[in-house]
Image (cartoon, rainbow, N blue to C red; front, side, top):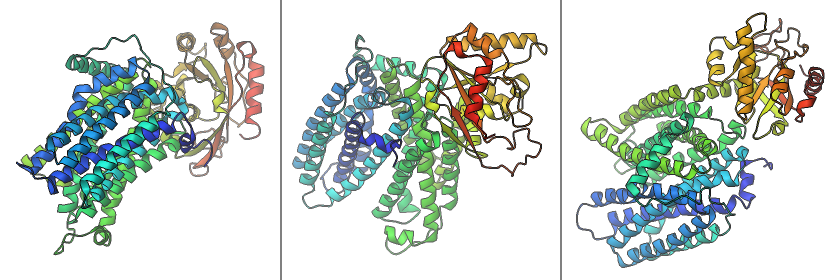
Amino acid sequence: MTQHSQFALLGKQRFLPFFITQFLGAFNDNVFKQSLVLAILYHLSVSGDPNLLVNLCALLFILPFFLFSALGGQFGEKYNKDALMRALKLAEVVIMLVGAAGFLLGSLPLLFLALFSMGTHSALFGPVKYSILPQHLREDELVGGNALVEMGTFLAILIGTIGAGMLMSRQSYALAVSACVVLVAICGFLASRGIPRAAAALPELKLDWNIFRQSWSILRMGLGQRPAVSRSLVGNSWFWFLGAVYLTQIPSYAKQLLHGDESVVTLILTVFSVGIALGSMLCEKMSGKKVEIGLVPFGSIGLSVFGILLWWHSGDFPQAAQPHDWLAVVAHPQSWAVLGDILGIGVFGGFYIVPLYALIQARTEEDKRARVIAANNILNALFMVAAAIVSILLLSVAGLSIPELFLVLSLMNVAVNVYIFRIVPEFTMRFLVWLLSHSMYRVDHRNLEAIPDEGPAVLVCNHVSFVDALLIAGSVRRPVRFVMYYKIFQLPVLNFIFRTAGAVPIAARHEDERIYQRAFERVAEYLKAGEVVCIFPEGKLTADGEMNEFRGGVERIIEETPVPVVPMALQGLWGSFFSRDPAKGFFKRFWSRVCLVAGQPLAPEQAKCLYLREQVAGLRGDAR
């Protein structure tokens, strides 16, 4: 494991206490909820329909997300987040003492009160949990940090669910569950004491205690953010819609389709949770440590493909006199296809959800972040309730089977995400860039940390192929505005990407004076707005693999808007399919390794053509 691995965060004071606090909270939620459900079904003497009481449990836990998420968002802006987390974890200890009393006394009212209180605790904790990450992590750590949180959450859910079954199987289940939840709550509080200070983003905020008015106001604030953020909220909630349907139907699927017992339910939940954790962990490597929303369409495609495959592979599973245990199920070849599909849904779910959380955090203003995440929690709750309603309608009213429900869900996923990607074409653009840089080319990069994390800068690079801009965009953490020859800008397919990325077409003055002048105006606008602009000073692709002379446009840009200049060089692209090498071939350099190298930033007064060309040539070296 290298020091750059996302797992290195687990060794840092600014992340580990938070991670442990979050993990123990998710674990405790699920131990308590699942133990209560099992107690109602198997242990407590209850009047009325046990299934109705089980559904009431789900309602009591999710209702606080409607009622109190907005309040949690306000708390997260007004108060120091570390102190707020400690206060909430101390409250969890009190709640679990009430829950423990409920188990020991066999009191359903006390257990319901504790369950509702835990839902309230989670509703208040959620906005603080996700808004604190950008305060303690660098931008290049956000994806890895979110991946660890998602991995930890789903593993905590899985371990908590299995642990509840083990505790409830004991003769003295009440004492075992009570001791467990109280002890875990105390450990969570102790872990929270190690969370570093996270100052309030908006301490002057006046709290609005009208939960209904504030919920509506915060929901409007969230959906009123820039399109990339607001549609990410919708996409995030859609994921929880899908997850709620799958997780709700897994027990029935295991019983009716695989003819299995409780151990088969556990097996499927384990595979699903491991898939989410695996997909989350892979996100950092596949995104190059930046917020890579190009993975979201990739995740969406996988969710639909494996959902359809799960429908295809379901059915005709052999029955036996007794329900199969998990060993009997895995002994049948068909089960491996089913488990593979469920694993695929989990993995691609991780690809889908982690970048969305990271994008929401990275692109929301700090003094609104907690409230926007509160809006996300409200939307999540709405979508999960909608998932229950849709499932009832399709299964009970329309008479679909569970596999047919999964098929409809997969087709709905296509429609929903086509809508999202159409409204925010940046998702599709980033996906195409990511696909190119992970298919035809293997892109390495060196010293890209020399590019400033914020503020304006101009990148200058040699020009080897038609896809230089895409490879640079896929490597640099910040959004980059490219200045490119207008005929390349107009190429089919690539034009969509360039327009979406805000590229600036330029022509020679003798070709089109209007395009020439407008290009410099737009570059100045971008730089004054604090953005990064990349230009190829050669003005055209190399025809022989050697660098052409640098033209004077770069000097004009820096004279009009003095900003730091970062020289860069692309190595290894000459001879690839998109270069002008006459001896190139599509398969000759397929999956070829290229490298993007950055030099140290230069002061504006150093940005002279001859000196810049010398710097870029030195970075390129002999690797054409």
